[in-house]
Image (cartoon, rainbow over all chains, first blue to last red; front, side):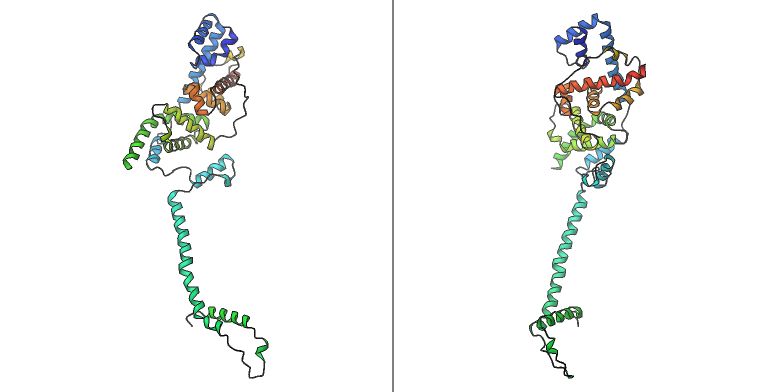
Length: 180
Length: 168
């Protein structure tokens, strides 16, 4: 094995990924080549230095407790709620409208309940009242008052139009309300 | 049913909790100190959701790293991974790279590491710090083993280049 071949396999050697035969050849080369031996030692030092640098950081002491709490109360997300998702999207630079927003289950249930209640109110509370008005005032529709001749001799019949008159009656009837 | 859930939770905590610090540290190197706790927590919540897909007896730490990689890609990755050559290429180390790391350099190493492109940084951290096999790294990063070799090589050489000016 020459220096070029050794240096091509150096990563695999320090990572323990060489076959037994190849590793044996590489170790033989190390015995005879000072430059490659130095390089191998430095790469190993880089590895241990990296490990030390990364491992010096400890997670915040409360992190484990927070993770376990959210797991135990699972499946309720403590993260990924709407506000946080939008906040993240701002930080990431992606448009707010493309943020993945997830609504917490209780909030979604309340929203659904509100919609059902509103629809129910519109159908059942308002529906019959309108019907009542129209039925109680059904008479003027059916028998519109015949045009009367005014005492002053003005002929109302010239202005009488069945359709329009009935609309006026309905409008007045609804304004007056059922109580009057 | 509650007993089943409690048992599942117990098994999950037993398997996954010991690796929390490792997940946090990796998350920190791939993002920053502020976002690392969020990434860690999201990783554990997702792992809990998919715990049934975890094969008992396999490397739980590597499985968690894989989930962290996905969470990180969804929430943090600044750019799409660069298009790599189809040809896997491992370059030999050169003499001028002998210069790096004659002595201990903690702070310089961390600063340099942050400058290594993300895709190479993942490979170097998983190989050097977490000491995963190339096959395990391939599973974490979702790429072929040959690509892992290439990424580890490029990552280390980039790091060596970044550290070299400190030595001159």
